[in-house]
Length: 476
Image (cartoon, rainbow, N blue to C red; front, side, top):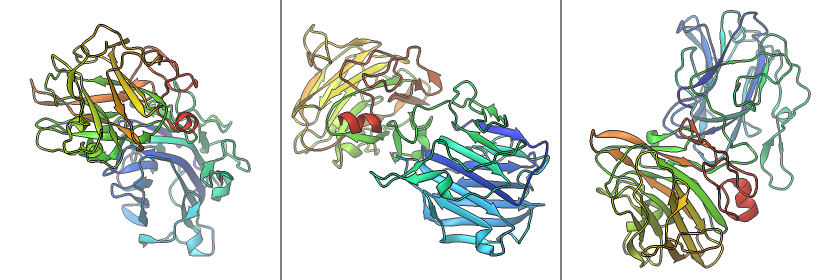
C-alpha cells in the first residue's frame, strides 16, 4: 500500500560489510519511486541506504554516509512490467578483493552488469552503515517516517546480516515453464539473532512477523494489507501501463482514481479467451452521468480495448464505432436508466437497476462457447434480462444481459472514471478480482470460487471463477 511500510530499529549492530536482501516484488504502477529496502539513521537525511525501483524503471542502490554519496548504482535495464513478479537480489560483500564482487544486483537470477550509473563502488572492507546500531531497517520505504513507499506487492523477503548469498539460494528455474520461481523454504541460510529476518507476509494480522526463527519482527506502519496474489498465483489487477494516467492506479492495482472534467480509465493486466469469469466493482461516489462510471469488456488489440485513453468526454469501450464485429461491451450502472452498450450491432439497451455510491456491482462473463453471454447485478441480486422480468441465472446460462459473438480474441476488463460532479472531486472505482477488498476495506463475506480461489463479497455462480493465473491455466 502506498501509505504503508515495515520498520525495525537496530538496537545491536551487526556485520555492516557483508549482507543480503532478497525479495519478490510486483509494482502496481510506474512513474513513482518504489523503495524495496532501506536503512536509515532515524531520518537525519545524511546517512541511509536504499534499494529501489525508480519511476523510470531503473533499479537503484545508493548508500549515503555523512552527507556524501558513497555508492550509486543504477541499471540500464528498465523494469516496467506490472503484470508479474520480479526477483530482486542485492549482495553486499566489501571484503572481496575484486571491486566488482563487492556490490552485486540480480534480477530473476541474472546479474546486472550494464549500468547507467556505477559510481563510487565500495572500497574493500568498508562499512556500509546497514545494520549499524541506531539505524532502522525498513521495508517498503526510504526513511523512517515514510517516503518513496513501495506500491504493489512484496513477497518472500530475506534480510540477512553477515552473509552474501547467490540467487540459487532463493530461486530456481522451473523445469516445465523455464521461469524463475522462488524456493519457498530455502536452505543454507544462517539468520543472526539480532537483525536478520525472513518475511513471508503470511499472517494477515501481523504482516511484519519474522519467520526466520529469530523473532526479529518488524512493526507495521500505515494500512498495510495482505494480498491474495502470490508468486505462484497472480490475480488480475488494473494495469498502470494501460491507464490514462499511471498515477491514478491505486491500492496495488485494485482501484482507479477518476479525475474531474473528462472520462478516463484503465484496462486489466490479465485477459481471457475461454471459460466463465466473475468480478465485483464498487464506485466510491454517486455519478449519474452515462460516461461517469463504466465497466467494460473489450477485445485485445482493438480500438475498443484502448478506450481508456481520454477521447473528448467519452472513453467507453462499448461506444467504439466503425468496428468489425463486437469489440467492446460496456455497462453504465449509475445512470437513472442504466444501459448495456454493444458496439458490435446490439446498440444500447436499458438494463438493470441504478447503482449508487458503495453499491457492489457484480459481473459474470461466459466465454465458453462461440455465442458468449454477460450478466450484471447489484448487491447480490442479478438483473433481469432486458425488457423482461426474468432474473439472470449465470450458472444455468439463463436470462443474460447480452449475448455476443466472442471471436478468437482475448477479452479484458476496462473501467472508466468515477467523478463527483457535485463538488468536482476525484473519486475511485474499486475492483475486486478476488483479493477480497475494495481499496483498503475488506469484504464482509468470504466467498471463494469452485476452485477454492479468491475472496468475493457475494456467492460466485457455480462454474464461474476469479481471474487469476491459476484459474486461467485450469479453465481459460
